[in-house]
Image (cartoon, each protein chain N blue to C red):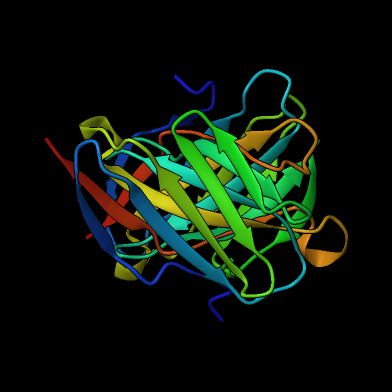
Length: 116
Length: 113
């Protein structure tokens, strides 16, 4: 049961342009959505999050948009830089309480390549 | 350095063997999470401990077990290893156990031959 899906395995963009990474979810019991970035041979690094009660959160070049009716979120990176090349994971936090107490469910990841 | 320490970084072992992966959380973090990343897969949640007690369980095999010790470090024990257990195993920690985000270690790459 894939509750969090990233349908694009890879994305290639030119330096300076916008990168848009997408994520869909099926469970309405998520209270936070997060994006993590992962370089080879390193653990995932937290990038940005958004509460389920908001529709946008911005942090520098990174903006996350949440469309609850469509159960869809996206990460926008503007402008994209070669150093942004990494695997990006979308994650959703289960509401605290019950057997899924606060755990994160991750998507499969999208490999972003930013060309100079 | 994220502050979450995992040892060893690499492990090669034979089928049928048992291994122990170790995780030291960030200073002050009470909650430890274990995740498995197999080839071409996302991160699969295995188990969570909070201040020494099991808090949540994911799709963890019966051959796998974990514990969190009084000093808050955690160990993941994998036994009767199979080829399919080859994966990256990540540990993460957070302060309260309710996030929203965790800090991950750099992982242990387990290869079963």
